[in-house]
Image (cartoon, rainbow, N blue to C red):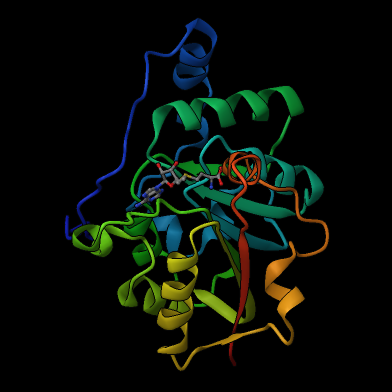
Length: 229
Ligand SMILES: C[S@@+](CC[C@H](N)C(=O)[O-])C[C@H]1O[C@@H](n2cnc3c(N)ncnc32)[C@H](O)[C@@H]1O
């Protein structure tokens, strides 16, 4: 479990100073829920939860945590790992954990790419990457979280049959993701018809960013990939 700083994080870590209560939550609640990128338990992530969950799911870049909290509340027997380096987003998720009394969330407040690299083989049953930062300029494309390296790490950590759910309102990013996943021999795209990627999957809780995209008239693409056996 050696952390080698091979990735450079380009996003925001803080937007504005935290108010009193979110700051208190960061000090009082986060330490009990925080997972270091290099935690030895990542090799067997069920061990991260006080009560061993049936499965472990992962959300990369949870933003304000609305989707993660919703999934956790809906699936109390699932252990949810969320990774998000944006402090104000982590504080928002902590508020929801407190308000809803959620017991099945662990948080990595850092770059998800290191976390994924330290997860054990075939330990994750579902992963979400929702509205990742688009980095639209040609010279910034290599900053996108979807890369051949991440796809190969996700192939390693996802169980056979596990799903990877991706959403983006940026057509070029959806195409980029399809190209990257198609290059991997370990994933299949589950769509059979246009409605499968144009419409949100059943029970989709939405995300904060998605709400903004829809209000601005942008149309998301919902891509679901399955880890092949
Ligand atoms: C456009 S926001 C979308 C947030 C949320 N998924 C939503 O849909 O509302 C993208 C998020 O990804 C996070 N992010 C960017 N790079 C990341 C990385 N390497 N590891 C984890 N999160 C990352 C950003 O901090 C940001 O909160």
